[in-house]
Length: 223
Image 1 (cartoon, rainbow, N blue to C red):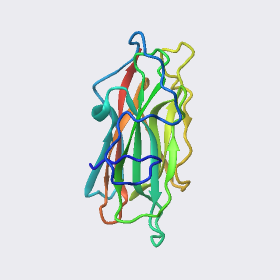
Image 2 (image 1 turned 90 degrees about the vertical axis):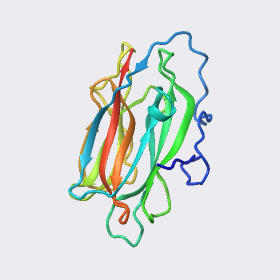
Image 3 (image 1 turned 135 degrees about the vertical axis):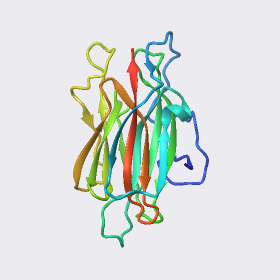
């Protein structure tokens, strides 16, 4: 997969920018001791259309950038104006680093924006959906789909820590806004309890640009 750096998810030909300063955050003080870990083995949850794709793409935050990186943002573009179907025709993702040695598990301010896939053509204007910066951890996706053919829209499921501060409150999840606002059959891809979303794989049709298969990667977050 070709990766690109995006200042505001704007498409460009620059390389990935790792350890950039997140404009929404101030870096935390150096941690004193390690309190959180992320497991090295992944649990996968997937959706498939009836039709198959002929091209693949992925974003693997923790494998490519470090164990503290989770998948927290998406930027998507719609289908071309001339196409009557409604679908995601381009997708970018943001991997943001969380401070595992800090018991509060805040973001460090380091992040990477990466291009995931793009159809041969798509409508200008990027639609964003993002996990909030404070005490919010991605635990899955919801998709709106045409069940037989393609993904139409996406939003992220996230959780806060519970009252103990040592586990995620997965019984009361939250959702980011839908990226585009299209209607469709809702499909939930949920990480198992106490796991966070660290990446995804997808297959798409290289001619139509429609996503035919999408799989998220989840890893244990352990205090």
